Each structure stands twice: as C-alpha cells, then as structure tokens.
Amino acid sequence: MDDALDEIRDISEVPAVELINTVAVHLMSAAAVKLGLSEGPDAAAEVDLDEARKLITALAGLVTAAAPEIGDHHARPLRDGLRSLQLAFREESSIPDAPGKGPGEKLTGPVN
Image (tube, rainbow, N blue to C red; front, top):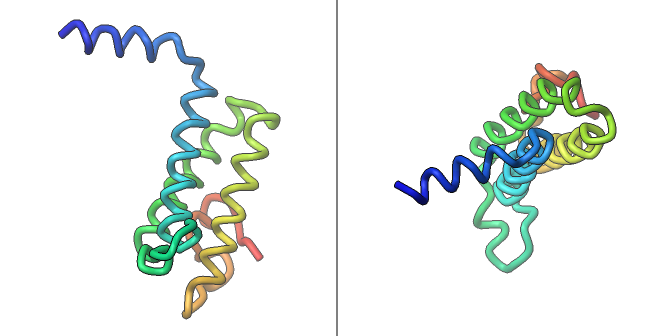
C-alpha cells in the first residue's frame, strides 16, 4: 500500500507537460515499431498497419487536444513526430488512404 501512495505522490510532482510528452513519445515509439521503423533484423516482421493506425490516431488526438494547453514550444516537436508517422504510414500502406482519411487526419487535416 505504501508503494501505491509513493507512486501517487511521485506523479503528483510531475508537470502536466512532462506527462503529456512522455505519453506522446510512447505512442510514437509504438507506432514506429508497428510501421517497421525500428532497428534490427525483425523490424519487417513487426509491421502491423491496423495497430499503427490506432496508435497514430490516438497520438493525433492527444497532440491536438494538448497543444493549446502546452504551448507551441512543446507542441511543435510532437506535431512534427506525428506528421512523420502519418507520412510513413502512407508509404508503408499498399492501398493508400484518400487524402484526409489516413490515421489521425480527421484531427490534423490531410498529410502529403
């Protein structure tokens, strides 16, 4: 029980922008793996576009919702990473989505 209280206290001391960035980086990393962008001989075996689509869309929601709260200084790198993943998804997909229909594009607008 004391461990749970320590964790609650620990997280209460972390600024919101840091938590948002941490979650965003985890989503980006997971999406990159599902797009086959990780290093190593098994990268191609990790490709799962359905999973990547979900992760990118969740990231787009987080970034879009958080940007006004965390400011452009913090949001810009998140937007850049999101856009890179959206473009990588388009490149990896054998049947491209229509403009504005790719992962997260409902929230960010079309990416080309």
